[in-house]
Amino acid sequence: MSQNIFTNGEIVIIRASNELVTIIKSHYVKNMKRYSYTVDKYPSTFYFEEELMKCG
Image 1 (spheres, rainbow, N blue to C red):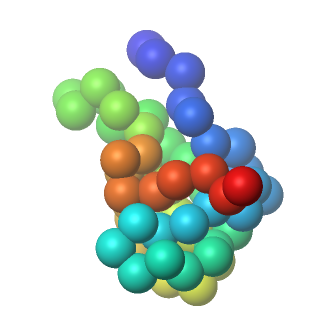
Image 2 (image 1 turned 180 degrees about the horizontal axis):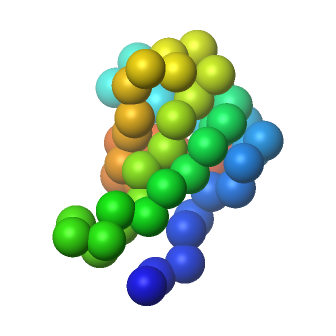
């Protein structure tokens, strides 16, 4: 299992919309071998690491 890039509570940017959001949950998707993240503004949607980027 790889290490996740983002942590719960971290503020990140959604690449597609340039929105600032806070990560509320991360989950390792075993069959895809990567992490998915749930954010505060869109709790029913999940994002993969390549769809998010660090602030600053």
